[in-house]
Length: 196
Image 1: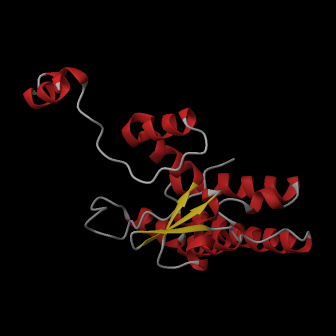
Image 2: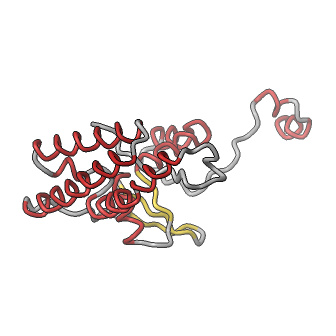
Image 3: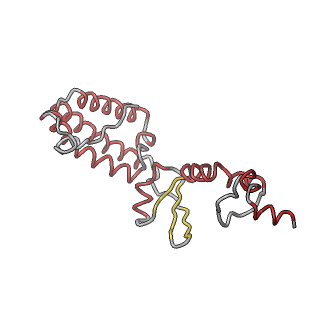
C-alpha cells in the first residue's frame, strides 16, 4: 500500500529554512488531511480503516495515497490540494462503509498494573494507542511487543530464562547479578568465608 503522507511543517523557518513556496503551500494543504486521518486512527486504529472495508474501497484509497504522494514529491500545491480533497472524500466513504458493515471501532482492552506508584497500561495491538490514550489519559501505554522487548533486554534475557527454568515462579525483584566467578574468587573476604 502507498505510504500515507504526513505534514512536515515546511512553514517552520527554523526546521525548513530552504523550503520553497510550493513546498510550503503543498505541506499546508495537507493539514485538513492530517487532522482527518488522526481522527480516523483514533476511531478505528492506526491504518486499520482500509482493512475494514471492501477490496474495492481499499484499492481506491491506495490510488488516492499514491496520487497524493506523487503530488507531494512533485512539489505541486494544486495537485496536492486536489488529492487531499479526493482523500477526504475517501476517508468519509470508508468510515461510512465500515459503520454499515458493523465493524467495531477501536476500543482496546487495557491491562493495568500499579507498581511503586506508577500505573502501567498494556495493550495488544500498537495500532490502537490513540484510543487507548483517549480511554486512559495520564498513564503510559505499552504494547505486548514492547513488554517482550523490555523483558528480553533485561539482563540479556535472565528474567525469561528464570521463568523457563522455574515454571510458575513469580518475579518479585530484579537485582544486579553477582560478579562473575573470577572476580568473586579474587575477593579475599569471599575466600575467608568460603574456607570456614
